Image 1 (spheres, helix red, strand yellow):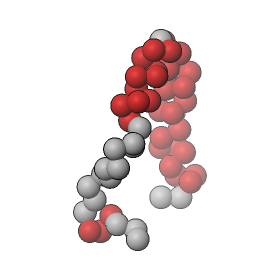
Image 2: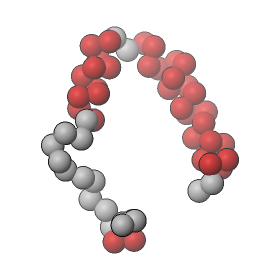
Image 3: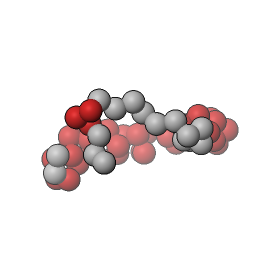
Image 4: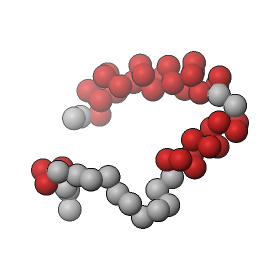
Length: 54
């Protein structure tokens, strides 16, 4: 998907997340979320064969 299309589709959601939702979360909640999504266990998302780029 070209960047222009991607931004047209997902830009409003990213903007709302940045402006309205994230500011309501505490620093502790943000830190906990960052730890939960960190890829420090060496696992990767399972991909279907057609999704593999390498």
